Image 1: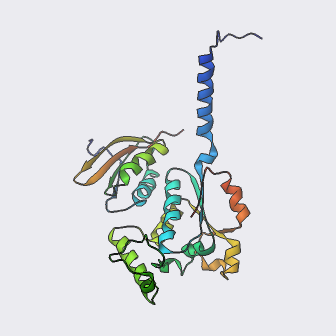
Image 2 (image 1 turned 90 degrees about the vertical axis):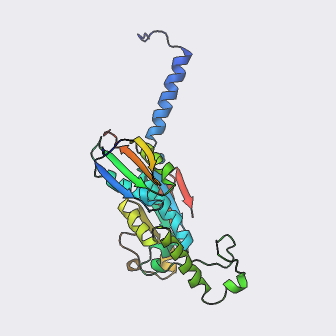
Image 3 (image 1 turned 180 degrees about the vertical axis):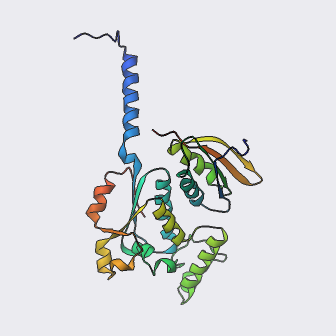
Length: 81
Length: 185
């Protein structure tokens, strides 16, 4: 799991569906292509939702894992097409 | 007619056709469009259209929700915060104790069940309907009120939250036919 390589952090712990994805969407708009968003979530649905969200938008899920009950995701914003 | 591409095998043709079809699907604008109808005005039924439309917007889709009949309550300034859930004839509703319909139908039971559901959602950090509306708007979801039911129920445009559009069934269908995702909720 990479450490502190993100350009922006979304702390969506305690939020339930669809709020982690919505918070991540809002944050991703502020990033430049190639920058990395880190998402923290505790909603178990986010295990499938965040990867599906990244894939659908053409962004890249760099890494994901669990740290003490918190799910951690690193998503790199797609290059402009 | 001459060609300098050499021998084209059946395998080449199959590959080219497959690639072109994939490209066409990737360009398909209907895969980026969701048109949802929200027809119910109870607390439980208010959630799915807002959650699904917001999620569609989060993956880059143009999402719209057409609120009709009781669904209008979801975008009504005064009604939205007072949505209720009815325990009568709702055997799937999780309750601490099974309550017969004859008891559930007594005065005060609907407000009580609604307060219980709100408390349970709040305890589990589920967003409120108001928060979901704000989130949907921020994500670019279009909220459309059915003009006919607005008129029949005696509402006026000012009764609805800011940014609501007004349209008829035909306008909705004209949009929905261009969307792969359509739902009636």
